[in-house]
Length: 527
View 1 (cartoon, rainbow, N blue to C red):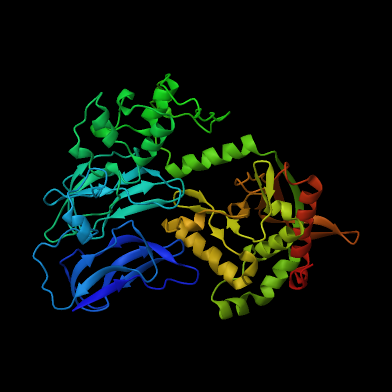
View 2: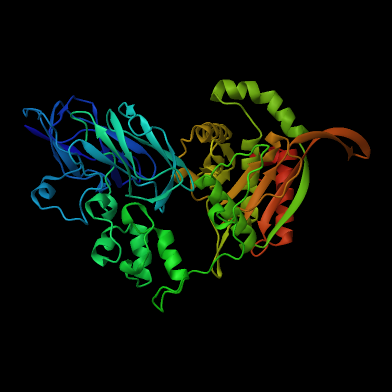
């Protein structure tokens, strides 16, 4: 008797997801409640358990396919007998009956027991990554689900796991090489009965080895184009046969296309090349004259994808926005007294410590509501005002600075904000933040004070128009009621885009923050 496998309800407002990975192949035996398939949404990743024991007899939705809640993606037969050599997952019966074509063949097609390692979908708008580090050498064996290679993107570093125990037999893309989503970066030899794919992606990159590396053959070269490369070629009306290929196995890279255009390659009149940035963040080491090594000892370390992206974005912010910074000082005595009175009760009730960040987040939101321009962004010749408050919290991660976003922070309690910040910090160190958590945001807060910074001028996080910089707390002599007293003082800075935020608004924004921190009761009554 066959039982249908359906996409379950995955939460409010979630109507569809993407098949990330099948844990079982057609023909494999399954135990009831055993994880069967992994489905990704824009909010969560869900493992769908087997509804009953039996044999997986059908897979209707390939890995990478978008599926709606309630749709049937496969079937289990309770009375079937498991096959000795299960077929590869992500193969619908209809597809198996047809002769495969190069443009639609699975990206991780196996030849015997040798399988391709394919770059999976890395998140919305992410089309490429960089091979950061191979965790295994050619000839080394590994266990099932063991991390095999790190892929760096401009937001996160992802580890590609192995589907089963086996051996790494070939590395196609070395460390530091940029690779497109769907590209084959290596090959493994899996043990008997192992799934024959790591990650499928229905792109022409799927089977580069099936096409001989030739120069001058447009038919052959065209099959080696990655999606992003093909898009660039089509937009500029280029013939792939005219482009000198430098990629492995004769593949054309995005850099090959750009160099071809820069050297006078024919392009469509309607598609002019993009203007180069007026001041790049850095120049590639390969484009610089050779630099002799100092005999006293030096070490060259390749910049990570994240670090290069941070550098480019920060420099772009300086080139684009009319950035200006205004400062103020805050007497932290009232908030420190409040924290001392309630920190034990707060932690006992909520299981998280009461810090200063949640109070500053609340104070910032209070100020953003009064000065909406700081929460807005420029889009062409228009200003987009946001009626929601997604606050980015800058934290130091294992790969560098990241800014996870706390969605709808205005609707969260102090405890929820503190818990969220603590979770962001821990997962940033572990490299576990998701793409969705690192995108968007309407305003950013950064706290250099935890490292001892006294004063700074933070750089905007485009397309945002404001960023608040917190600093360390130092006891300083100040005048209160015509008397000199010692108070814990913090300097705060607001960097803002002067194209959209006027000086009066920026100063008023910081004054409202100062008032809320020095008189926290104002936050309770919203003034």
